[in-house]
Amino acid sequence: MSPQKHSQYFKIFFLWFSIAIICIFLFSSYIKSEVLTNIYASQIHSINTLCQRKNSDLKYYKIISYEKRRRELIIQCVYQEGLYNSEVIANMIGDKWEQVRVNKLNEKGGLYWPIYI
Image (cartoon, rainbow, N blue to C red):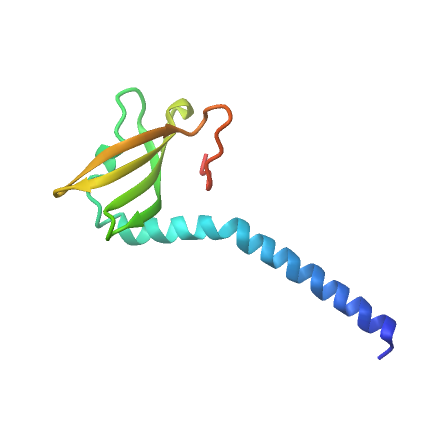
């Protein structure tokens, strides 16, 4: 194999390796939230009350972070009307989940990752 072909194979390998690393970096948070939602959605019974809004119906939610020891939960709630989409941070107090903070996902200057809108 000539040195020129060897160099060309190395460039192609490096290009594909770089693309794979970037894809893993971008999609790892989506994969994590999908796994967390599938595992813990049945165990956390009050998610619907945390995401409940009078003005719009809940389309779906995703669990972004769940820490059992710290008793902390971060979920994204997506509604039929997109203006109400929000990220809810909740803590378990006693045996009940309580909202600590609610961030609107469509505010100017805000970047929330992953975004499921």
